[in-house]
Image (cartoon, rainbow, N blue to C red; front, top):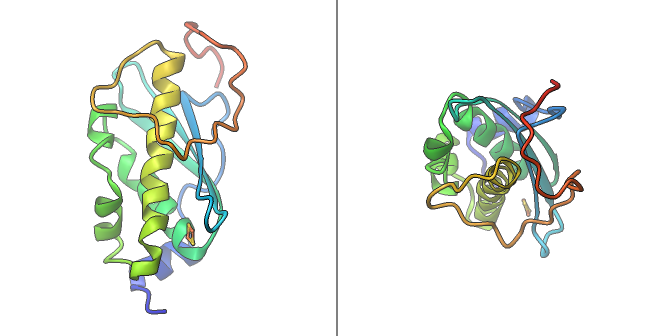
Amino acid sequence: MNYSEAVMDHFTNPRNVGEIEGASGCGTVGNAVCGDIMRIYLDIDDDSVIRDAKFKTFGCGAAIATSSMATELVKGKTVQQALEVTNKAVMEALDGLPPVKVHCSLLAEEAIHAALWDYAEKHNLVIEGLEKPVSDIGEHDHHHGVELVEDADD
Ligand code: FES
């Protein structure tokens, strides 16, 4: 398969691998067909700016490259601007993906959306234009129900 240099770069040297403890939002999505799973953590400040983003991906090389790029692209953006980090934007930033790998970039978009959805839920906010992705498998510590407390720890 022909991958761009950017894809190979983000696959062999992925940015932002890891977890954020006490993240403002965390989203986990999965693709039932290939079985790949992607989790994205976001640290969002009081001005709705994404200060940090990290990911953990159990998946193919393109899924790793797209989560690496997606986390790079959302950092420093507001929550509203982060919605513009679509799978197309991620693919463009990576100079394209082979057709059979387009769904990997969709997983990255959905993981961002799932993390934003989690953030909105935790903070009792509505993010205009955001929908909960159907691929959200919500496998993260979310046992508090409605939680209006500001993140005290970090
Ligand atoms: Fe499914 Fe890459 S093959 S996410």
